[in-house]
Image (cartoon, rainbow, N blue to C red; front, side):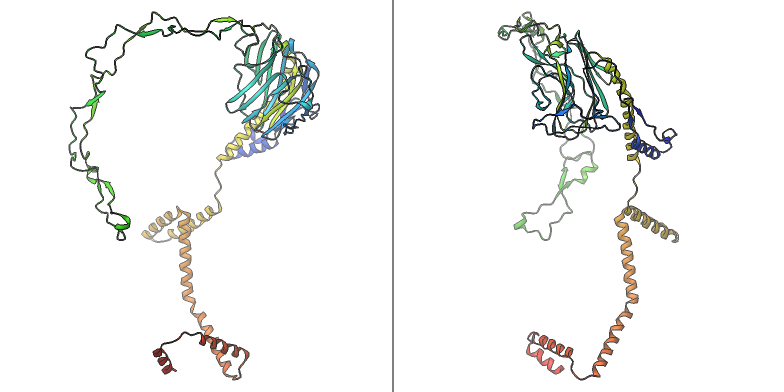
Length: 564
């Protein structure tokens, strides 16, 4: 796949005078930019190459119930390239593909693949396992965590772990497999770009780890410090039964036994003493306390001594002390004691009995052997597997390669590089657009716009007022406009006063209408002496009200009778 970035909008080539204009261009560019590609042509010999252009192809998920994650092949973000996609967090994923024929790495091994953590990687693996299918019968359906591998390679991050694993399962001459871990593994990149992970081991045992084409580790399988434990166990080991003798002196120095504490050495002398030369500041108030009862405080009128206890005035700072250098007893300052020496210790001298740092004696290592060809002892690679647990989604695996030399790997790197550069440019444009968008001033809300309009109207009214009144009115409106609540409350109060004034001016005319209507109703009633149904109901209601009236005193009844 030859990758290229589609043309960006023309505004990117022009001089930008506005961050907002740039943000608009960047957003438009990000929305349309994608890395285009065509299928690559690889001339180097490969034992396995998977580009996922045809979908999952020979890759199949394990039928073990543990693997609840379902990988798929999708178009990776910002590109038209397809890759193996891990779409859900907090899942186990187990998917593998079998090589056409088992590959023997004895004469050299090169593995390479791309890994993109589109959503970042907080806790999870993005490594691949290159399985030893001869050690144990294997099928894609039975893949699990115990499926033996020849090599585990790739990034892993969780908590304190942040590394690119290089782990071999190596067999001793006795057929015992041991994991050999790269002692100082490189760290994985911390971004969301497609990174190229490359491991090459020559037939001589030279090891090279590259990330994005740059070597991040170089060493040898034969160096006893490169892998832990080393591929060739040491010829000698510490004797576990050996112990340090009781009279072993491992301190290179000792106290001088001939040294004697000087007679004038006073261990009890203090480090500081009173400064007799210091003088009390003028105006120091010796008889004034630093604090006193508040003379302005008074016992509350509702204070109940039985329930509240004895009332005590609050304590406040003595105002006299605030104006003076100090109050109360003057503390004499201290100074360094020139006679202070502290505890006496004998000087240290070389120890004539020093034998050096003790270490257990060496004995022959019963498990020692020399493996001149470590790659011949890791088994043949018969399958490639993604067998991980992850708390992060968005992992994309692509362009997985297994070969004996790096010819095909270099060709695939030439395919990866334009894609990486294109996606990096798109991501940077996204970040710049986001930064510009965040820097854009916020549009004022509805309430803010109303506040500004009301304040503007009040300022306009204040400006037409004469002389000193205008200045006071302007200052008053300025104070109001600092708080939307105060401004709206003032306007509401003015409107309320205006409404009440209008009501008092025009409300009298409304009261005459009921009186006129009442008179008309009475006039109509006089014209008809015959009772109506409504009259009967009214009489009944009046009788009920009369019955419900409270009893009156005799004097009250007499006054009522006289009025009647």
